[in-house]
Length: 290
Length: 288
Image 1 (cartoon, one colour):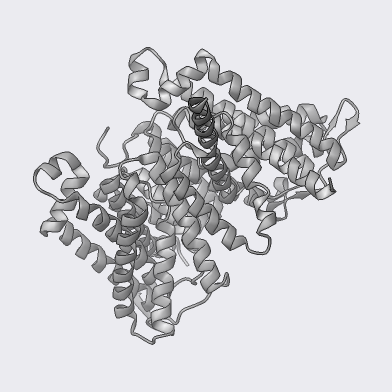
Image 2 (image 1 turned 30 degrees about the vertical axis):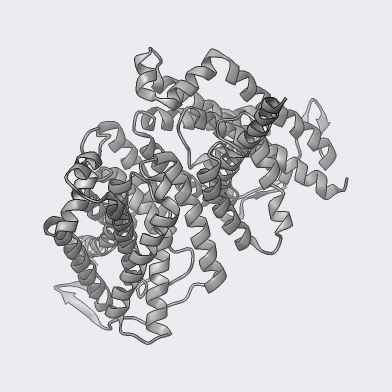
């Protein structure tokens, strides 16, 4: 395995974490078009706390994640009372606003130049300063987020999420607090996105407002939809397939995006459950034959 | 320059951009009203409109107004075909329909990027000189564009108010089932609604092409503003969109004169959030 393959694997793992966050939000029937903003908020907050205030990594990471969760709570509290469409529009506008604020607040964030020279992750005196060492950490977090989704799916809370997504009015009538469930999912989902952001910032060693623009939010959605929104394996499959793709289509970014767009429409049309449901169908087919 | 003049100038500029937002927002809200789909490809039709007008004027040397008219026709046809070929399965499916239009937007934007390249290009101005109103100055090219936008909006309004097809469209917006019982052919109304909506976006792009530059990325800004207008005015409400876009244009322009542009943007976003808390259905929207 070359360094480059390790690098790709790390990116796959980090994307699994970030997409898992969105999967949780989407489980309650909402789609956030500002997921990238929460990745960015946590990354910037953690990096600033770590580099400017000198907090140790674990504390600054928690601080960054808490920031993302807090912003998600305030925003979600207001807009989750409204119909789903407003949620989408406001999250989109909010993400643009965060990007502008990061650009504008140059004294703190470095503006368009971003922040370079972010130190590698250091936990208990051990520095994850090579790609291979970091891969271990990234794998652990990716596994943890998939495990979290898998566990959640079998708990009453998970079933409540599904009920809310399926039919909010019926869920409300059955005694579920729709607003509270959606808000919790949004806050936790954004916190998970924040975790991904903090790790990404310390791995790449550089953040800029453009690292967290709409393109990121849309890429995350593409990964989730192509992987499968309903399945706990969706984020894993989506991230694993779509993260290395740019490397295969290197030098043809436009072709890649046209491919993404076409894949998105085709999957929605022919395979609404995403690639994860394809595996399910195959297995079911085999069981029936046996 | 004294303060009242400064504010007056800002208000006039605000009206100009307000009309642009209105053209975008009316098309957007029309598509939503008919199909219940949030059209994320709206920005790309603005961009395509700008390119079609740009090509007509510079390559084929047509006059400006026929170019814009041609742009509208081309956009309606493309919109019709796309609705029929791509979006048909997603009518009234808010979530999947919206994701499908994100895919559409990616295809259109990157297609334009491959065809036209990323560099901004500029179009010759449609008029020279300035119009003086007292101490206020407005470039004639802007006056020209404002008059054209107002004419397009008026035509669209008359079409929706008085023509048979326009009334059928509005009936579908209000209640699709009752409309179908009355004999309105939804098969034709859906592609028509989408075509007209994106046609308006394309006209906005075409009209603004001489004022701003033309590149594959120009759609994002106006679309973001159209989103804000639609949230402020109430999704699906055209009078609400009219009020909100003029308010937004003027607020932005006045706030931008005295504060930095991004501070003005942050202020407006705070306004939108405040609005959602106090009156979730928008200025003139119907409560759900």
